[in-house]
Length: 421
Image 1 (tube, rainbow, N blue to C red):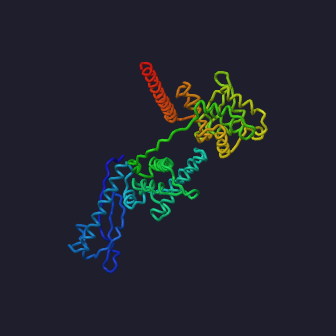
Image 2: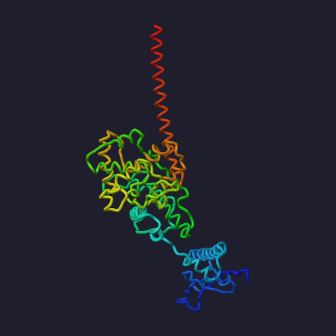
Image 3: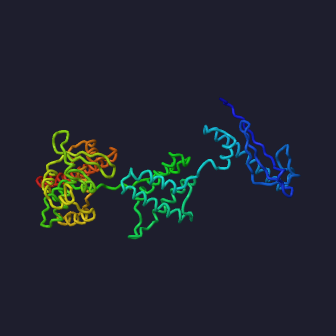
């Protein structure tokens, strides 16, 4: 097998096809005695051509311009050869020509990676998640049209400036439905989705550099609201003659004692209630959001609710374990329950999942690794935010205790001074 490569570049003019004494300039690339000719798209007067030097004679402005162009073309051809060599590609005269002309590499655009992402992830992502990607993609295309006056942009043109400009575009964007601006953390989510698509392009070698290297997103810290033990007890004790409110209360309490999110509660059937490893009743299902298996032992309160709706007509019609309602109606009715309980918190159904993580499990000594499994989290770090909430609650309680102790000391000191007087 031949291991050495011979490579040469010759600049020449095709005088045999000259017109009006003007001949076209060519570069001849030879690799291992095989050659190709490449037109340099320039013409020169035959009489002014120096065949020995492969340059235009003289020192006129025109001669200098053409000679510089020839030198640049030679350098570019040599670089094409060097690049192919560095990439361990098969080096032929045709390969060098293609690299020089840029015809060996397809230049992919943002729309290409959007289509590639959607086609390859349609069966992997939940339709709601894919919908979020399509929202981000819509903003991207709107941004490109506004910023660059075009419908698409090459991936090779993406850089740090592009990311910052897109970030600024989102921060100034007003939503058509309510004229409000997009919130900070939502903007970061849009940037993250763009980053995932661009990273995919990098991995499949559609781009050679990552434009996000210098971009450091910072999430605004938000508190995960949950119910305290007293607040949870107040809702459990809430009584009403209105059937819809009673059902909503039960669905909320069910989630408080299982940690199951709304979309997954609505999908539960009797088939999801099975014997667990300990011989007791467990709910065994999968999270719709991540397709992660979830296995939750049934607590007494949960079992009471399952029994209550065992023969419920609404649940039988839908074939579900519990009656079903839309998330919008659930959250609307929960506000009525909150008012009935004189609760100032903005009660939402997702708060039940947070309550399970904090008040029901972590506060009662359930290890965070177990809570993570029960919630169906794929990373422990996702669960650890609840531990931080618990630590903050401990801090608040201790600060309250400090105030009580200070007050008690002041009262005792006052009594002692009065006695002494």
